[in-house]
Length: 578
Image (tube, rainbow, N blue to C red; front, side):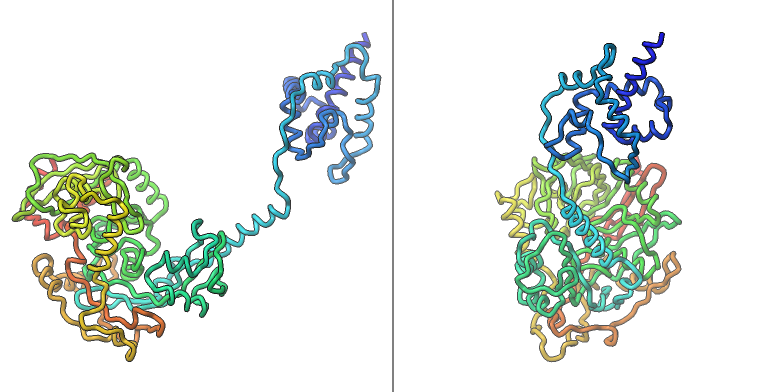
């Protein structure tokens, strides 16, 4: 009667030793509770079968990180005494019992022999990371975070770094000092800082960047470095410049709808949505913050700088994510109106040609079989002389989708400065024909034409100014005849100004019309742009006949007034809605 209980006790002693040797955690739980009942009978058997599995032993060997680990030692060796773990005399007693010859009586489980028979070759240990290397890696991450916290954000201090003035029908920004920051890109690592700036940032000559490095205006991790410094991973580059922004249209930004969650505006042409390139304060985000006190807006979608029309911002993160998700899932119906060359065909015309980005740096695309799937429908809704007013419905959201598809169909937008140009060949890209040019040749030609036709050039007869440094800022303004002429045809500059002065925005913040004030300007003797007279942009540089008219989502819909160039009085709106 008493033989069977003795066998069971020996079995549990063996099981207790295996649990303790394989994992101190299980032993501690057994020792604290003095019973295996806390695991349950089923769990005890399951854990025992797992631990005698060779894979379990191999896994334990790998975690040890030591090739000298012996499988028998994992099962039978007495763990080293460690006061921090809380070992006691009871530990040695248990292991001595496990190693005693008495434990091999008939009926006992031969656990060790079973494991040794089923054991397969162990894989080589994984490479371990030393403590010093791990510490260095963490320190780099912490240093990077500390540098990021120093990067400028859209705070009140940034909004107030300069102000607007209005001249010649344009919104202009007083020059101001600004710190450009960027982290080192992978392709820059190991190169000299001067070589990188001379190649990647061609707004200024290499001599200017060399002077900035030597004077400490161009720093690495906010510290002065030599000209031959070689960039490293996570280096934060900061360059203090005297910034001159590009003028934009004086036309006001109309509030279409505003509540506690979103702001919907009618964006004028020529104004970028958010800071980019040569634009910062002359952007929709900054103008709304500075002139309408609408700050911390979340950008949900974007429009090209020359495209006018409906623009939606989120005032809360939750609403912004909701609308972004709808756009991403193609649950938002978009309708644009444009004015194209020629008489557009009757009926609904669908274009499914894939579009490929030729260059992200200069922002140009073309139809290519290697591009992404793209789909747009077009419909003529009116005619104006030799031109057509076309309703466009993009069913996908590719870069320059409407403009590229109209170019491919042979009906480019009338005043599109990019896709209605002979740089795409004699046929201007119709049917995908770009005159046999390669993508590289197309990019080079576009850069040359952009530099030649860009309005940011020296005025005729204007010399580099070395005497009076403020001459470029206080020069007499010459009325822009082209701007006045197109203003008379469309919305007229005078009515645009009156709409701002007489009709305050719905936000209750009236935007002032301030002339140039010499006391508000700044000057940097080393700034190249301070010494040059730049001519103001012509009307053709500020306007493109493409307008975002309607956006309709899951449970919302917004629309703007059509621009005057669309000849809205000739459009049959009932036909459009069918």
